[in-house]
Image (cartoon, rainbow, N blue to C red):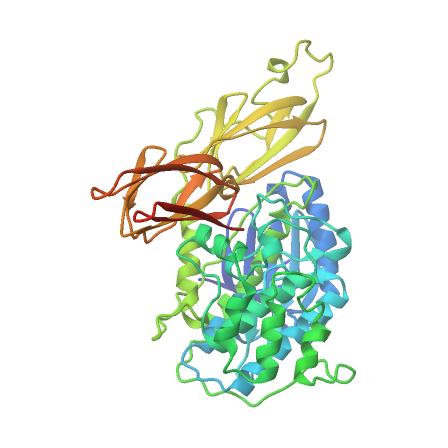
Length: 536
């Protein structure tokens, strides 16, 4: 971290330390001169944001988050404009995130229950203000030595009344804590948060994560194919109230899931008329790394500055900017299960897969912000009498080469908005490991059209079991010899399968893949019985 001495920002913040800084935003530990206390300060250079509507939305969200004044939520202290900079300050809470806090500690069931109740109390207040957090996970839950807990990072928060829907191609949140409806891009409600709390609670009490796979795709597939009944055997030894609330929070069907934080808190005999917070005895910590952990936990709220403008909901048109904050590596779990203490390394690997797989080739003539890259006249018979312009933002995970009217423009992620004359254009996204995406976009005058595609939505998964064994060919491509240890990714549509064993006659058949489904094929050479099971 960079040390900054006696620097005053915005005439009221004395900088103690710079935690993170890039071309668009910065995060500081600072003293608020007028409040006389340490705070976390974030600043955003609005000159680097090319769409005024993004700034307007950011201000609206900041005002909303400032209303969340609760003992179990990190407090927004103030915000405003200074020159070209928008700034926002948060309370400084000397703490660690839940994952770091649990390292080296053996908490009792009672202590874990107290932590869990505080999460529910914080969410109860947010939900009463019609705010859905959308990213509940251990890294966004801060705990101090006295077991006092605060929820942080409402940067992905959604106003429930806005009734936005996340694009089915967009992943907003952390996959191994997301609800099935969140993964599927359905409308989000407070019940989505409650499912995430159930997933976190399951991990807190069992030290295992329900959904974490070897990569993002497998994790998403685990969430989509989740069977609520799988929870039962792993929570049987927990106290009855904890067992019951976890099982009901993790119901896949919304009609069966707990409807509110109040309903969940009823399992813990919390007096909601009298209790907004609960306090506890200090927990001894065998190995302290206080300053670094506290600063990293606080810096995690940095996403409020950037992720508020990273995602568009429904038909909202915004520039999309993505920032990540580095986190420390988790420790190994002696049971070799991905519990809270171990999970972070796997999450980081999944995040890194999205970055490291990105292509390095760039277009030779990348367009400037104010220079049109193509003319819409290529698409229409009669040129427009008046030339008018609009903008296009393209976001594609994990990455893709972007072609407009069959001309390569760039490779995602694309930092700037693209400028086009108004009209309709074809768009093509190419990635070597995914099927080609083709679509069209309409560029409108003085508007930003956003395209957000998750290439995982174009594929499904395949597994095959053969008795006694077999060589598996799909679409004339050899996949391997059973038993197959991995799921295979296949594009949506019909596929031909051929199964070979030198002791038997070859077998051929066909099957269909639907997006994000897992198709499991079972075949017995002895009776030639072939069956297909689909896990939705």
